[in-house]
Length: 421
Image (cartoon, rainbow, N blue to C red):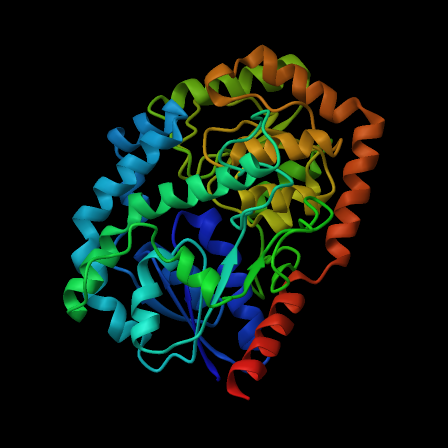
């Protein structure tokens, strides 16, 4: 079992941990291909992995005004409905490619992409490992990250996971419907692949830190928390000279960027960021990226970047302000500096709450309620609260001491030995 296919869906923050995992598997001798949106080809091949396109460009899709309107609503049900609509447009193209893309694979590793490939893996008799960057297995200990803060408990917590898994399935099952049509199979099961995954005891690994969120005691034994799957800057990478000059010219700045969470009014986002930095008296690094932050007439105390590896940038910041995606949250926590979370939707409020509860960042500010004054107050707290800074530094060290990729690779190898015995 030397040929592994990783099916990674979503935006860069969703896909990047799987590339880090794939690189770790390649380093110990596996042949790794990654199936992902075509705009991640360079990122995947630079990591030394084989790339296979799933047929769409996620950046092009989510940057139109219609998608930005849905994102800004903060309503995850609307997001899932929009995903369902997009899936109908691309399902036949994706399904037509998947069997050939998985040919010769000895093991499939995937997270929410399991909705697309489970039927094919079953037909081709390819073993699978589930791999997620946020909790997806039902537990009684806390509610699903997609319904954070609800005052429920016990059985209702577990039910919330089953509901959100069903929401994912209903929004993305169109690819499975197309798969089944291509393969001449019957109707897709109403509950999706989850009963089959549980019946067959398909293992699952979670790419986040137990120091951030401990493993629930009621999870199946073969569902583990490994630690984060980081993808660091490639060998030989050097930062832009103008950024280095800016960092060396003064005190550590505050990073502000919202990843792929686009805005229909990027000028307003830029204005809020600049005003908050001025009110808090801090220098800043603004990330444009897919988030579309646009600014004009920048002061000397602010520098704009497009895309810089978080692994290099974040440790050089006084604090980091971001949307709370799982990958960006991981990078901020590892850097050992306070995080200020501005959640838009999905699991982002969950991670924002965890950051606050761990004492490594101020209270999250929902994007719809963000003002320059609120952001300035959060920045002042993050850069001046000695206890918060100490706790962020300590947590960062614990995360850096983990070997999440190593733990995941060991889990894969152990599973390989069992299924080939």
